[in-house]
Image (tube, rainbow, N blue to C red):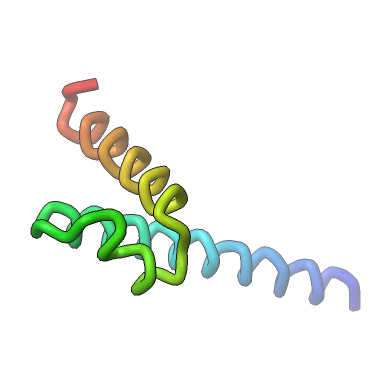
Length: 69
C-alpha cells in the first residue's frame, strides 16, 4: 500500500512542477506583452516579489536556451 501512495506523491509532484513552469512562462509572456509585475501579481495570486523572482528565472532560462548565458 505504501508504494502506491508514494507513486501518487511522485505523480502529484510532477504535476505541480509542470504547473509551476506553466505559470512562470505565462508570467514571462505577460511581462513581454507590456504588463507590469504589479499588474500580473494579483492575477497569479502572488506577491510582486515572487512574480519578480519567477521573471528572473524565466529570463535566465531564456538566455540559457538561446545560448546567451
